[in-house]
Structures are given as C-alpha cells and as structure tokens.
Image (cartoon, rainbow, N blue to C red):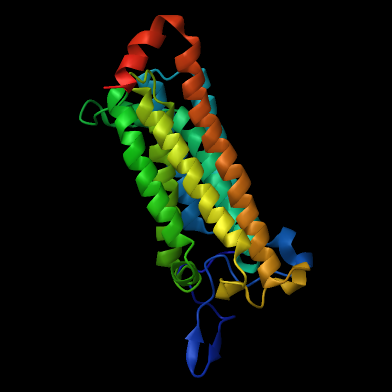
Length: 288
C-alpha cells in the first residue's frame, strides 16, 4: 500500500455531503489482507534513508564506537518497522495496535537510538557549529523537563479528540508521531547520558514517567465505555468490541510503560548505591 500524503484517496466516501478522508495508513484492513498492507510511502522511505545515511557519515567522522553504531541501527530498524510494516494499517482498525506502535517507538526504538548518540553523529556531520547535547549534570536536569514534555504530549495525543484528529489529517498524524517520538528521544538521551553527578534528577524523571504512563494506561483500561470514535466500527472483524480493544491498548501502555521507565530509574539508583567511590559525594549532591 502506498499511503496517501493528502489523507484522501479514491476509496474515500461521503457522509451528509462531507468528504471522509482516508487515514494516512489507509482503510481498515481485513485480517486476510493484513500481511499485504505495507506502507510504501516514498517520502517516508526517503526520509528514513537520509537519516540512516546522515548518521553513518556523521558517526564515522566523530569516531563513534561500534557499540553505539549498533544501538542506533537497531533503533532505526525498529522505528522503520513500526512505521512501514502492516502495524501501520492495523493501527487504523485497532486502538491496541496504535498503542503498541507507540510503545515500540518510545520504549524500545527511542532508547536504542539515544544510546547510539545521534547528537555526536550530528556534530560529526555538521562540524563544531553543532554543539554536543548536554551530559552530566545538565543532562540530568534536562531529563525532568523532557519527562514533563513527554507526559504532556502522551496524554494530549491519547485524549479522544486529538486522537481522532490523527485519522482525518496526515499533517496531524505526523505531528503526533514526531512530537511523541521526539520527546521520548530527548528523555532517553538525558536518562542514558553519563555521568550523572546529580542522580536525583534522572531518578525523578524515571519515576515520573513510570507514574504518568501507568496512570494513563489504567484510566484507559478501566474506563466504563469506549472512548475512541475511529474504532467504534473497526474492531469487530478482529473479534473484539471497541471497549475490549481499548482495554487491551490501555494494558499494553500500563504494564510495559511502567516496567521500562521503572527499570531505568532503579538502574540509576542501583548504580548510586553500589559504587562505594561515588556513593557519598553523589548522596550529598542529591540532598543539596
């Protein structure tokens, strides 16, 4: 499938004289069609190729290690798969698939890309005109700001109104993906930056992210009625009612979202408590 960049296409319909746009990922697929529904949008594929090539050139110039390059390429591949694979059209039918796509991008792909230090590669590509991202204390404090932005964007785009708007406009759809993924990338870049001389900030950012994703997932899971209008008629082909689909999506956000960010916070706390040489000065820094 080639996604329509205008959000409209020959398969569109009308209701009460109003043209109904086709979502970016196409019409809701039947189960038997799904494996044939790949998003072969040439603009998306070209953008992914440019990002890969830019990182490869910049990382080589900057002397990035093999481990960092491997992390980035794995994250890039997962990002591409989430956007190009049949998961894209499946997310038109199922809220749970859209949430699963978001979790892959923000909880798996984004930390892998961040671990590849794309900022270092960007500096290698552009030269000294491009400052390196903050590390150490600066990164630790920025983690809290990034966690707040990620929180706001995640809740906004999973509110019923903005969520429905992503099915009606390609621009809104990509605004959602770019802002959520971008904020997650900023957050993970700050969480993974070392050393953290004031670990209280990174621990707090991890715990805040754990709490907000868990709360949002719980609210969606425990809602007494279906909230997401784009899926009111698209879930039955998959053996789910709209409410069951919503509950599954909420659980996908609730459990993995809590677990991943909690592990990140606990890893920082564990490093603080198990490094005797750093324990006392870092504990003092936490209490300032």
